[in-house]
Amino acid sequence: MNLIELLLFMGLSAGLLALGYVLSERWGTAGWLVGVVPVGLGWAWLMFGTVRGTITQVRNSLSLRPMCRQGKCKPRDYVLVDSTPEKAVFRCRCGDLYLSKGGHFSQILPDRSLLPYMVRDSSRNWKADTARPTS
Image (cartoon, rainbow, N blue to C red; front, side, top):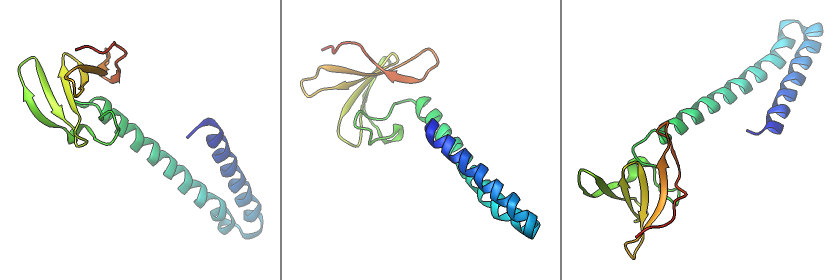
């Protein structure tokens, strides 16, 4: 949700609460329910979506592997192909090969060269690796 959508949502909430106030003058508690129930449900839905999105982001950033380059495979969708104590080679469901070594996650290209993909930062989150391709 961006700032404009949030302001629009807050304006709609204020409008519904004002409508509830006006209707409460005529119908009492039933008038308040016309405004308060939709506003409460809307804010509950917004908070649920925010919390769920935050949990998903944290889970993906702290996982052992990042999402694949194509964005289709989650951290659990990798299959271990080969490993040594220093490095591991994984294949995602898309068929791409990745090398995990020392906090770096690089794609293995068909010519066996490495294309840097993701690296762990100091807080152990995955971020884009801006290093140059290596062989």
